Length: 408
Image (cartoon, rainbow, N blue to C red; front, side):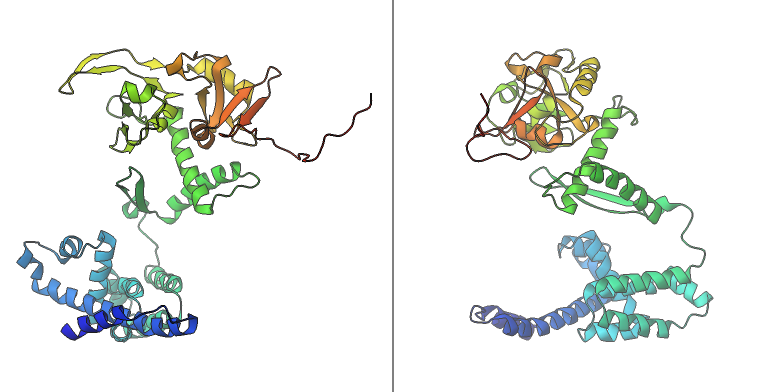
């Protein structure tokens, strides 16, 4: 072990700057093979630690919990290491290729699914030659990308279970959300084929409806925006189940000074699920939400609370939808059901909550208007949009030279 650490230290001390493309790749290839071999040793050691109950030494009951707490692995990665450690007893060809550095840790985790108890039991019942399966799938792992290994393993498991998956698809569905330090949310999910198809169909309808010329968002950004829009539509519809006596809604708590002030106030407001957001973001939500005034005492005990006020009542929103027909920001095709109702003059500054002071804006452009952009409605009913620097956003072909002469 000391020699291994010394060798890594020596590698880390090498200056890579003088090396160019081919030399760097030649250096990388054996490092990757060594990484795979090291992953195999880790899996083998973890397996022995699991069998001997070594986690008890540190006061834990399982190696999965030890890997999460002591090695700082995610739950998914800890489970993968454990699977890879258990599999060699049943998949010797995979174990040999893994130890030789020809199979990655991720591939080993995929191949190890073949050796899970329920799959071994089915293979034994059907007289499957597991050694042949081991050789075949290991050959795929050595010569093909990781995605092909996943496909090959799934094909084997599908053939092994001729009747298909259990009739209840919810057993395999998972959704895990994690709050980041900046208040954002990161997550992962697993869906069955039908559940995944439903999600993709719903998201794709919103992605395609929101496509516009010169849309520079990546596919991933478009789908993320569509997911938020799907949630927004469901919340606005009022058809979701009651949550703790109320319809589910986005709740934001903010001090009156931050709400009324001009500063963005990063971290000035707190959401119902514990995230902190800027005052500007809270003011944007307040354009088309409910406002409840609560007076707090010095010990954060509510002393007084006023009635909740709905800023834009439903009949004003319907009138704005009929008048505007969608987002009024220049060049935006977003339909009415994607839009919030924005106060042209902020309600906190005395702006009226009526149709003359209302504008439909989609989420993206509502945010922009609260960060320097501006929209206004002309007497003829057409909307104009200005950038923060005061220049107007014009759509359609524009002349850059002198104006054309006109006949007298």
